[in-house]
Image 1 (cartoon, rainbow, N blue to C red):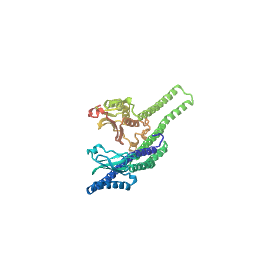
Image 2 (image 1 turned 90 degrees about the vertical axis):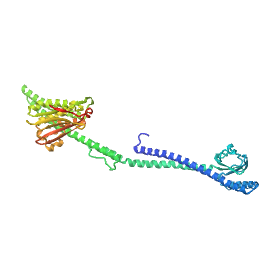
Image 3 (image 1 turned 135 degrees about the horizontal axis):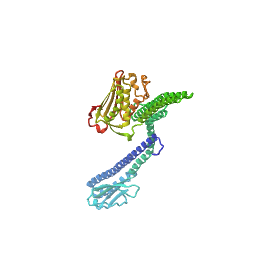
Image 4 (image 1 turned 180 degrees about the vertical axis):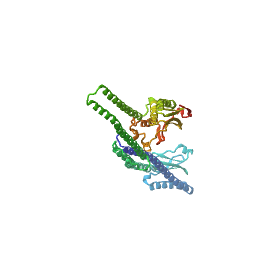
Length: 479
């Protein structure tokens, strides 16, 4: 198939080729069957002529003496040949019992065709066969046993061959017309079938980063093109959501970074307005160092978030026992929780493993535990549990802290999302967003259930490692 052709042209060509091949096979089969039927009719005509003449000859032989029968036979043969259609090429011959020709007329006159030895010996039945008598076409010759000898009748095969040739010529003449009609029909059908694709193409060309609201029309037929349109619409929706998330991220990042940068710029401007003593310069530099550290943590958080969206690094993926991993996180935060008067409880599971990046999972669980401690009050309690749920591991971090307002739960995992009451606290609103991206990168998910004034429960689901799917986790121990 030549390159550069449209799908419609290629479909039309394939359709035409398939029809041409089918028609060629059909024509060959039809011509062969018609040729056999016409030849069979020619043989039948020859045999009927021989049978009629034999019946008359038997009657004459029974009723008249041999001399009269001989005269009748000569006259009858001559009359039959003269009255026959010239195109039939009729020939009649009577031979004696030794195979010598006694009377011959028409196409058999002067041919001197010998009788087959097996017929003379009576070892073979009478037959009809094609014999070349010197013309353009073969003759069909029927030989029958007759009173006192043999009767032979021949008809020219020209008319039958001409009928076969006529059928062949009709088919050859119709073949180009049928192919042309087939090509046009194929092109029309292909254009009709591909018209939805043309609409999809036009719509797709109009869609851009600044125009993601448009969707590809779906006709409701449920066919493959409708499925393609629905798949593309879902893809466009995901792209639109990603672009909107990027826009929000850029806007929020610019807002979060602009405040400390403006503070640094203003502080530098005030400091440089006049000369100051070394101690004052040191205080300014220390203050600026704290703000730069604040900015550095923000950039590092954004980098971690970006890396998590790129997926797991195969080189860092390993089989991880959740028990020891969570125990390390709890041990790290235990002094902080104790200092703030918050009770920290943990049940370490055994035999519960996942596949993932150790550093990322530690980061995710650390963020959840850090938030629970940061927003907790003296006398609150935090409990970390891990258990198997089907083919997934469920890790929960539950606290009895202030909880999250209902109107903020829907956006709690958005980037740079911070509650109004938390604006004065340190942070950038990226911690929970990072937890969600890490869970997604590991093939899991994260959810939150909270009631204001009663506490919050964050749940992280992770796929269990295949080696632990067929055996139950051993009951854990209190840490």
